[in-house]
Length: 314
Length: 243
Ligand SMILES: Nc1ncnc2c1ncn2[C@@H]1O[C@H](COP(=O)(O)OP(=O)(O)OP(=O)(O)O)[C@@H](O)[C@H]1O
Ligand SMILES: [Mg+2]
Image 1 (cartoon, rainbow over the protein chains, first blue to last red):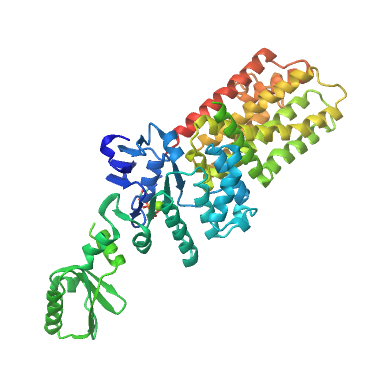
Image 2 (image 1 turned 180 degrees about the vertical axis):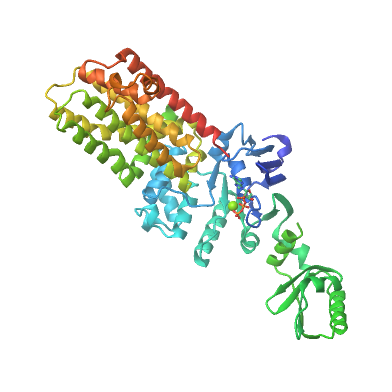
């Protein structure tokens, strides 16, 4: 590992991906520390999958560089592949092979010596609660079990780093929790996790550090606590007028200190770090326009609102 | 090197297990060539020895290309092809693995047709050993050819169409059902540009002891060289098709 990598097991510098006219990833840099769960949080189309694909060698890098475990991901791609496991955004194992056959194939392709393959596959099947289904064809497993098996297949060679692209997208609450639990356990056993998600709760629930990506750029980063602090100072003023709510645009012109104003069902929500002038502004606006305020409340912002705000500012 | 060879065998084994029973491989790869051969070899005009090698060539070509279509096109479409790109192996290992599964399928398709000709035709093959070798070589070439085409066509959904155009063009222009000696002279260059012409001529010499226009030294050598070129080409195409 080169000296300036510090304790970063993944180092990314000024990474760019261009598709024809589109800059899908726009000069991003970050470091993933050994043994952490690193979350890449962003809305649809933010560039999460594109970033992962460049790191694991499925896409060409337009510009910039990335190192994993000290190896250049382009030059030393075979060495990189031996130490990483990759779970793509779709569960893409072989449908006619059984759960066990899929794992054995993966182990063989990763060069696990023959005598250890069976043992390794069985251990993973048990770890992911798939033992009873070991002889089921992949195509006959439920969505949640397919996902788990796809994760298992990325672990047959005991990788140091596991890339998970939207590991729980489309799973029900139960399956999602099982996956989270397994990820946390893997991490405890020493596997560094790089996880992408659009689920704010997931990122804040299981990641040690989060980078928020939007339109190909990293727009915020920190631990869940740090990110939380950034906006725990933020509050949401909810207001409703009688006989009818003014438009969001109109109201935004009249309140000072609002970070965002949006209409939500029968009320309007205003995010702010300074609620007093906002409330004063609202009262004044009501008086001026001969409206009644039928509801007014103040609460702390939640993680999803922070996310929307950060992403909305772009 | 040896390590990658073993891994390409694993890929072939996996492909075979996954796809040999799929309707696409069965109908295009096994049933069609057999029924076709049966119809031609037993038709009114009687049994012709000339037809036999063409029928074998057609069978191994249909068989092997039906496997590459499945194992590459289908996998690319559903996204499982990318799994192979994540293993610590080279592109050659992937194209060889894919060629080997096509090869197995080609041999499986050719066997029933070969047996059929052996049963029906009164004369045994001229050179048995050479016939075995040329079957192996031509199946290899048609496998790597199918693999190359499967990777070359950008849109996976169009590969079947491309394959069928290639298959039927070759069927008529590659000395299989229409002798090259009876073709108008301006068609002959086209025929000579098709790999299946060399393969069929190689098989024809081994089976009947004579050839139409390509002597065995040429037809066999060209078949083998093309097979290797297609293999190398496929690896290059996989590498370049990375987005
Ligand atoms: N092969 C491609 N060709 C052209 N554009 C692409 C390609 N792949 C992705 N894009 C574009 O790049 C941008 C980033 O896509 P990407 O898949 O990385 O987003 P994402 O953050 O993973 O989103 P999602 O949550 O939907 O998975 C999108 O605008 C997408 O349309
Ligand atoms: Mg994605």
